[in-house]
Image 1 (tube, rainbow, N blue to C red):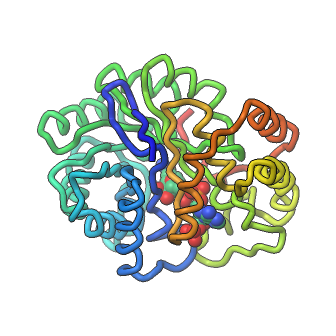
Image 2 (cartoon, rainbow, N blue to C red):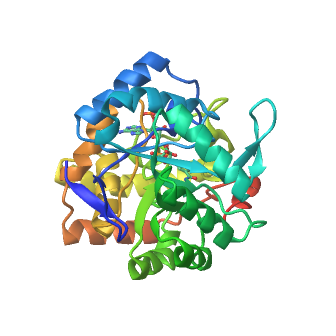
Length: 329
Ligand SMILES: NC(=O)c1ccc[n+]([C@@H]2O[C@H](COP(=O)([O-])OP(=O)(O)OC[C@H]3O[C@@H](n4cnc5c(N)ncnc54)[C@H](OP(=O)(O)O)[C@@H]3O)[C@@H](O)[C@H]2O)c1
């Protein structure tokens, strides 16, 4: 697979990474651990070098899984993880926090679970409105100087916060939601990243499975599936939003590609410094998704996708109220 560069410090990664969250939470029951370890190693064999995890996925389970799976190939891969949440005694997430002492302790925990002595890319998962971002960036800078972290990233941060952080410690990548289903980053975020030389890692690049054509009007999302609480997956919204999938499918049919491949190729075509991290737990889907790296959309394809996503007004918010409040703007 082709490689891409994130950030002006030059972090080289595969053009498509692998989102690991679903192996521990968000899309129903956890698959068996040994299957996921084999799966993660198969992704390495297929040329994936960027693996995305976070302390909060599980919590803690996902970092342990990724750490165990990638230990034998540690030097050949880039592991990205995230801090920024607090937990109660039972390990349940209780809200955002980025106090410096908390960041330092979180990094020590991540290093232990990931079975490594340095984190390649460390993101602040959500901006903490109670801690000046300069203090957060300064703490990560110290961790970089100490060798525990290689590079700094942010997630769902607004332009003003990114600029302030970047002035203290250069930011390598921003990770925020971006897809044909959610194009808000185009307004202010992407121009700012281009100006500052910061890479972009779109999360939920398949719209949490919506942009694969596998979600239908009949789909029901059970307990433990985050989509059961997301407004745009509610029955009526879903029905309306499927019009977008139909338009993406039209392009795919012309190009001999699946809906998901077109959705990922569209992201890759936006900028050479964009590296999507689709999440899956199935080998045949991983192969399908990685096929997007070889799909070069034409100007005509891109224009058609652009008008499809402008003409089909996506119905329903992307997050429920409580999750939306954690987004920095
Ligand atoms: N920074 C943040 O705040 C944040 C937030 C959300 C996610 N993330 C990161 O971004 C990664 C990806 O995002 P995401 O998992 O939310 O959404 P996504 O990658 O857009 O979609 C994942 C969903 O699509 C399904 N899927 C994947 N490939 C498929 C295919 N070819 N055909 C049919 N279905 C397919 C997966 O099911 P199966 O697994 O069953 O295949 C899963 O249900 C996560 O793993 C996580 O690392 C970060």
